[in-house]
Length: 223
Ligand SMILES: [Zn+2]
Image 1 (cartoon, rainbow, N blue to C red):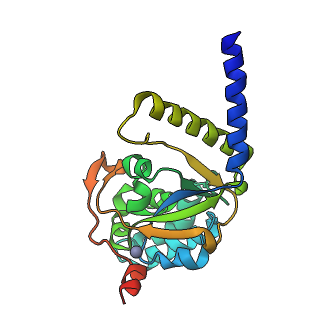
Image 2 (image 1 turned 180 degrees about the horizontal axis):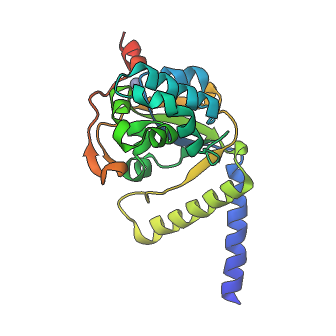
């Protein structure tokens, strides 16, 4: 009976947190490779649009002598790589540490789809453009689904319990992604930074150190 009562009480606490979360914004992160984080401050975070991704690959292949051999077969190559799981979606994560630890390929190579289309033998040129960038987004949780807020409330409650019970040295590293179905406007893009080392999950977790740690936006700020 006591256990049942405790569960009811905890459910109520969780429901209160879910309601409270709907009125909050949460700091999230989006990993990318860009030469100008300013595009995110001006355009926001845009959902995956297949035609834009194809145009970006075409432009890259046309402008790089090492890739030009791909040009005649490009339409066939595109057909082999559907992007239905990405189309009209964008992704932000709760914990940038998890992104750097486990999925840094978004920062090292940029678009996962473009990286896949080029293939292992031809993705090298992606490393010569832009720098790994973490875009900071303050995501209003009213834009997320009830299910996502429910999962976040459950996570917060569990982590709070762990903090109280075990007093660990740091906050749990969590793999938690918000899948968004619309563009996020520039108003919610609040900052960015450039990590200086990360493990490359596509190259056996070898250490990757980017050649630079600033973008056009950083350099414009400096003056
Ligand atoms: Zn920058």
